[in-house]
Image (cartoon, rainbow, N blue to C red; front, side, top):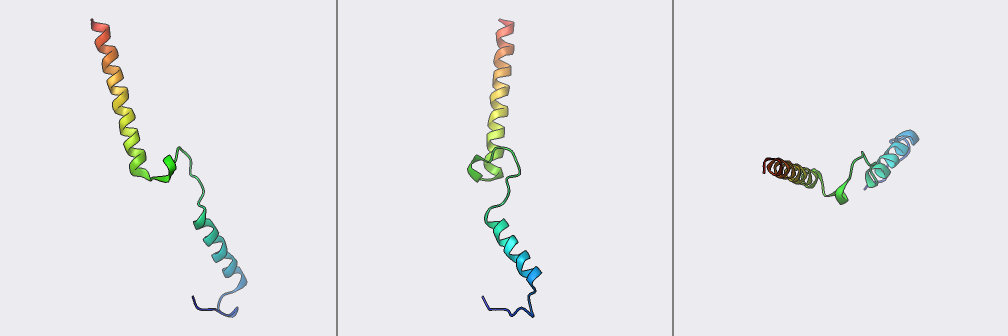
Amino acid sequence: MPVFPSSVIGEKDLSSIARYVEFVQQPPHPGGFPLHYYGPVAEGFVAVLVVIFLAVIALWIEDKGRG
């Protein structure tokens, strides 16, 4: 990367760039269970599995009530 003199990049801009680089290296956690940061596809897959599991349990309970 080329070296820029202080006349091109001011102290405020330089500190803003440094803060941004630090932020990108360790982003904040927005909440929820991150699943080891595999991404939203894995989290959505787990959610679908949980919904299917709950539906099966509900159907099983309903079937037990009729017998």
